Amino acid sequence: MLTNPPRVLLFIMMDDLDLALLIVLEDEESSEEESKRSKESDIFKNRATEGAYEILICRHLHCNEEKFRQYFRLTPVLFDYVLNYIKDDITSKPCNRNKKPISPEQKLSLFIR
Image 1 (cartoon, rainbow, N blue to C red):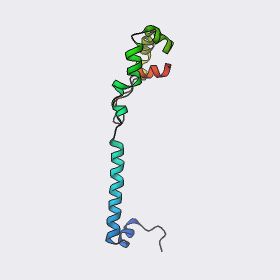
Image 2: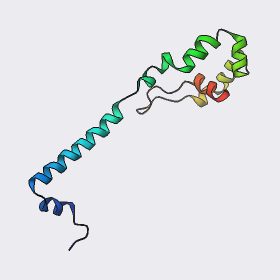
Image 3: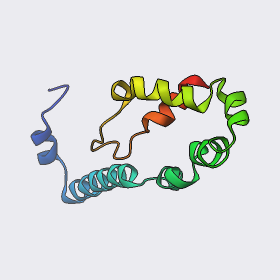
């Protein structure tokens, strides 16, 4: 007797009810995997307007040079200079998996902080 019979042989040995149950279970598993991949959290959808970078740095620190310097240990002018120097190297292109990549400004602020 075969220890690992081929899949076709298993289908022959199953009755109609077992086969129908197997098909339903496989369909449920594949639909669960698809639904997990397609959902995007609101956290990521609203990152451009409600993210820490947008709120803290863009709204508060950029307009206050003293607080900006305390937070980053750089002046805004020096931050912009460093950013312009490395911007091409740290820029990510959008792709299927990540349609809105982190901006070079955000990457630099995370790195410095």
